[in-house]
Image 1 (spheres, helix red, strand yellow):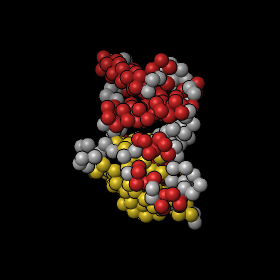
Image 2: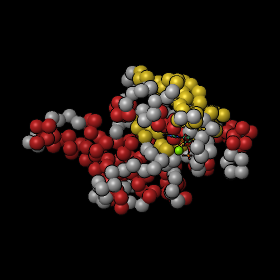
Image 3: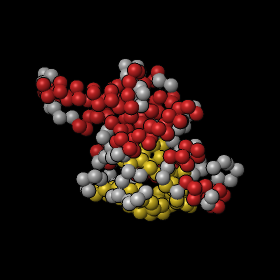
Image 4: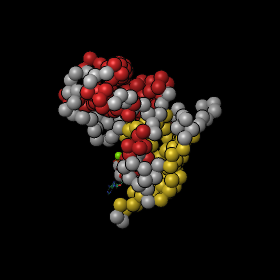
Length: 264
Ligand SMILES: Nc1ncnc2c1ncn2[C@@H]1O[C@H](COP(=O)(O)OP(=O)(O)OP(=O)(O)O)[C@@H](O)[C@H]1O
Ligand SMILES: [Mg+2]
């Protein structure tokens, strides 16, 4: 990377404990505009807990989380409700997929665009021109996003009818549909077959290149992580043990030790 852009996320020494257990301890890292960052570590290392703090689900016991968006507005995210963080341009997917199962594929996308709504309640009731124009715009954009993840032909199916890999892709499209600048993907390749994982590599790259998104992803599939991420942070027992480019991470003795017995 030639020159680093704007720092979009600055995590300063965040910690959280659950009862007696310190799940995340003094973790600091930074993410720059347009980067594709990996967050890896063995099971229970605290990866999802970090995403939960970054998106307002959990409030860190100590430390600070600071976002800076394209409009250069700073947001100190500690203790801010998830919907407010989302409005600021932060979006995510979940390790255990959370779609609206009894809604169509299309409506799962449309519902996450609601923060852009421009018409009034009365406008909607009487189907004003503005309402119809806005709905058309949402429809077009939703279909465009579904094409992007190759799901446009399934737009009228219930989300619950999609195979697992397609549900993951739909969740990613939904995260993008919010108009996010930064997205967090929690194990996007989990449960995907090799062909789907291969397709996901192209998809995530396109999110960065065509949508200009900044992406942080958690993943256990090391081939995927090493192939796609520009920089990687490694967590073990709630502590950050390494940071670097994929080839540096692969040969780091601390990382090898943390993953003892596993292939990286
Ligand atoms: N709400 C909670 N209450 C109590 N303990 C929790 C809670 N959330 C997470 N933990 C604990 O924090 C630790 C880190 O969990 P976390 O889910 O962040 O791990 P992870 O790195 O995402 O693991 P995996 O790779 O298995 O998804 C675990 O010991 C977990 O049991
Ligand atoms: Mg997890």
